[in-house]
Length: 449
Image 1 (spheres, rainbow, N blue to C red):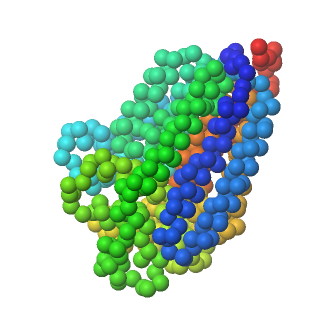
Image 2: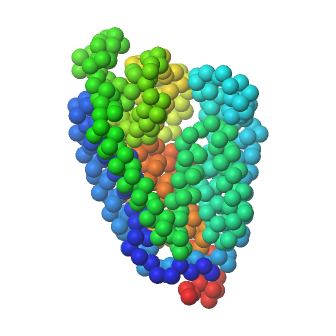
Image 3: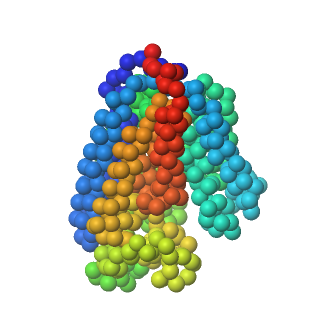
């Protein structure tokens, strides 16, 4: 048994990760760009986003109240079998994926250092969603890296199996790097670090203080960057508003309104000048990591208000999507072609998928009612997981993965992608099974010291 000593209010700040993630990655960048957005759908969107923020905060507060009623300790006695299952759940699918790839992107790039960006994109696609394998296998590959890998790594570290934890991190990190995908490796590292703020331990206050410091540093960085005018040229659409591709559109077409992200796309399409490389990197980080999620989601609200006014309905989730025929294309493909491919034909391919936040996808399928239902689903998952949580180290690690996953994925993925493709539905199931197992075992070893 691993004890933690007394807890402080600081140690519970991680419980609000989902609502803080939504605030920082969706609400704030949406408010920042609000004046640049076309009137079509923007008031509705920001109203929905604010309402979701309140509901998520309420769910986090209830989750905190539930978890604070428990003793702060870890029981490591029954963890071995669960760690073994988690290890198999991430090692076997990742090894199988590497074996089945026609070409491992990282190796192909190392062999040909002159590989163009478009060729790199095709390598990633061929090693991912264009692979000719059953869909369930593609899901398993995602589940392995998003859920099972961090659960195994964190639970191994908690139970003093440090070498196994490091080995698991190295293998999962090598796999993520081999696929040349940026989000998976970032999500893996952030989840493992964030777990230190959630699971009981004497190091928990330090991790919480560090996370708070990083959040404040990010806010200060953005404030300084915009206050200094470093990105001011991206706020001025005058140089691009007269582009021929925009002038050919209808006067009321919402695509004619340019956001900061759109100006960045126009700028990056030009030949390289004498600009600072550091400045280019900073612009890309702000554009891709902070502004893009709300930008893309806004285009969904525009498309399903202006171009496609009838909600798709729940049946759209069951339709087969192919590469041709607009009626059979996934909504992410339709929005991508309409909002980005049409305006930036040299930058985006016909295979584009503009994946949006869960609320935008729910709005496309069911309108405001659809958004409400999707939000309630996540509220239930959030509160239910807190209620199912026990002192089991694998359960504690899974709970940390859930909080971090919701904080990062809610602004960038649909409900079905978060719970299904990324496998977060597995965590409540895992917590339920662990709680049932714990309830059927003698409780003497669960007493805190």
